[in-house]
Image (cartoon, rainbow, N blue to C red; front, side):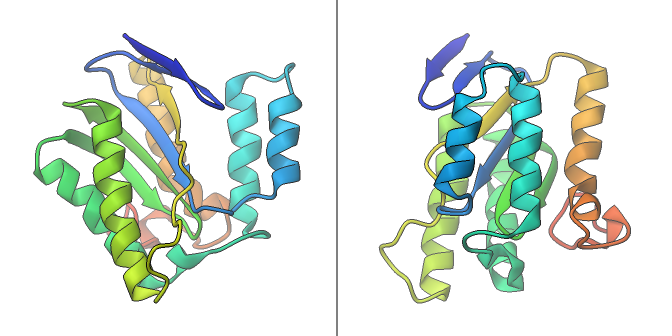
Length: 181
């Protein structure tokens, strides 16, 4: 079991499915992040839902992933880590300012996120004419999936995120998702 802390605790048992979320740099106001840090009463799950709902409003910071070319770059990077055998991707969605991914790692999570975030940040920054600037927030949220029921609930949560955010009426209509048909 790998365990470490930065701003968040990270429990990463080898070979277990993980739910991972990361966001664009500057996509949440400092006051919202501070409120989440100070909240010692709520569970990590409830804190995550508040965090994700704030991202879904798109009221603060960049929304570069709303641009089809940027979303395509990130989606391709996710496909590439699967193709290279770093992980099995079970579900994903690229939202306007964040990404959700349900995966089963074959290597350490940091290798997977580095491959996705590093490649996509370089390509997106190049396309946006902002080379050398931060694109992704450093730390990702991750949750170890403990049961088949939880796995299915998370998969549905990921694929229905564009519907919950009001971007489409049906999950299958969001092009940058494993639900797209």
